[in-house]
Amino acid sequence: MRPDFGSYLEADGATLLRFAYVLTGDHHLAEDLVQEALVQVHRRWARIEEPRAYVRKAVLRHYLSWRRRRSSDEIPARDAVWRSTAQDDHAERVVDRDALWSALATLPRQQRAVLTLRFYSDLDDAAIAELIGCSAHTVRGYASRGLARLRESAAVLQSVRGES
Image 1 (spheres, rainbow, N blue to C red):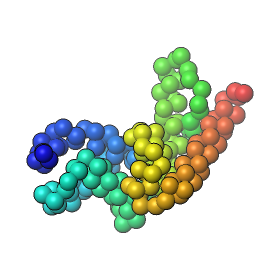
Image 2: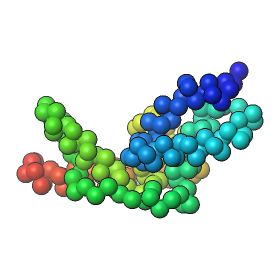
Image 3: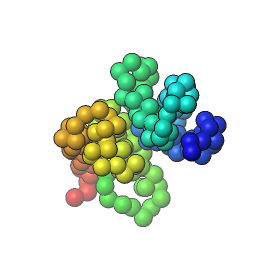
Image 4: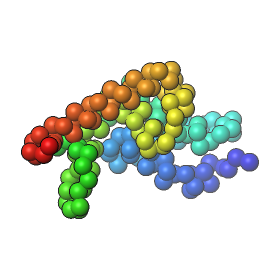
């Protein structure tokens, strides 16, 4: 039995917000994104058979939409880039996490969405392709190019820090 809209939000609202935050990298934009998706979903709630998948897809579609506000294209002004080596120092881990967010923010929306769905939501290529509306081959291409850009960012940071 499908829960009513309020019960669904109580159960999955925080998960949706985390998903949107990983996509956008901005808490306020994530809240706006989820709110806009939920407004549209609420209108169709009685006809939705699988709410969890439907709402996640609505959030993703809003994120990928070309008609989104210009503010969604803004990239945080940070010079740091991510590196892959783990540090014992808490401050270094915070710097690395911030650098990862900065590097993710430079990726095109499709690449960031694919990497988020693959590594945050743990979906396979076929499920990602269905959500985004493309082929599994295209998903693999987006993932490959996105990961390559993140590796380049890691290499730049390592060279700046003088690491091997």
